[in-house]
Image 1 (cartoon, rainbow, N blue to C red):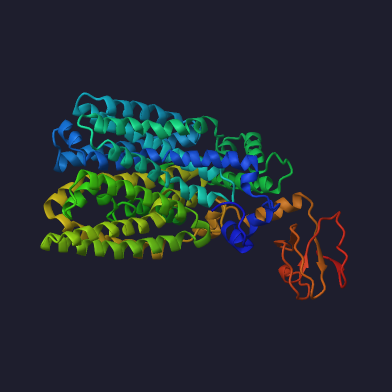
Image 2 (cartoon, rainbow, N blue to C red):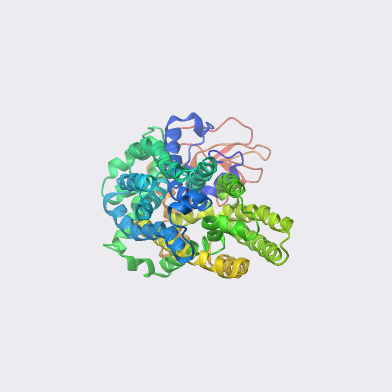
Length: 579
């Protein structure tokens, strides 16, 4: 999952050669280091804030399966039902531009409490409302926590996480969606037999449960060191990195690397742009590429058919003859557990397989399963055969499994990675804006289309899935093996302001590491973990093979020692200075 990989090549591929050279290599697992346990507790807690959005999606699914809710809401249908569902994502979409400004102006942490204000107000109003207007206003307020937490929590995770854990933790963030959706689905299943309004009021008040669990972490989590550096608070940022990344080791090469790389990158960004604006998102070829990814990813994550299943599972099941409230809520509850398991497993694969392979596997798998769902639904509509209708259910699970492979873990973590610090908050904001625009469209249009043409509406999404697959293949690059500051090398090419190699070289030189190559006998293989700068290159001499020493390729035959060290005793060893 995260932590030290058993295969050094996997760790180096995930981190990149330069960052791997300065990572501690003491062999102690992360869960035995108090500072990393605390840091990962904060990160996982931030991921649970995504549960607020997942709670809403699954809760509305469950409520629409309850006659008690329909009676209270005066039996909404068509456009009016679509509006009741769409008001929450619309509220979130309106909040994201404000959150992006807040994040750069006042930091990533403070706005978390704004989300708490709105979730408390919205959940209480929705749960105890005396009329339909109050319920709708409650959903309006509940859209704001999704914006504040969805815009700030991923920034904190991405910018605070330990380097070798960042890929997993940022991908894990959106898996929290299914924690909320699972709670909501099983809550409505548990109250389905209530004969009064508490059948839907109890699940509504439970929207406060997970935020209350996360509250201690929201209060204790440190501010993003990158935000602090950007605002001149260098000492405070160094203290946070030293405390949480190095266990208070003041001499940590990792901290030196991170501080140097971040300071250089932010200084370069400020030199290029004294102030940032929304127009900067399209001001350069690299930023236009990032913007294209951010916008299309938000749309693709929702215009692939998932919106039909997510908000209208009950109606989808109606179309294939599964109309029992117990059956519908049970299927919904099991589906959320399945989603959570697959999403967490997929998050664990982002640094092993990479982001791009996961995207392609996901889109192709969804396309195949969606075609099968459409065919089975059409057959049931024509024949009325019950077994054909039931066959749709396992394919819904398969379809969602493929969705969870990429679009659950990467819809937030991928944009959070590709954008530079100055534009990261805005980059996430436009992903979320496009996401909620797509959700708003889906939740408003889907019930109308399902009522009008039934299963034939699924065919539209099969065509869209083909477009998604082709676009990802040609436009979504791999980001594995790069630090946040090194992403510019992928998108900005020669305009990239900082490279990990340059930073590693500077850090190692400033720490007076030896520039000595030691030749080894042909049969000797040693492991040594001290970095070295040779000419214009920096190496970590951790593996040596049996070729003759070659300063141009030190991995072939040499290892390095610090200046004060002595060569190990071994036959055939001769010390040779390197200029």
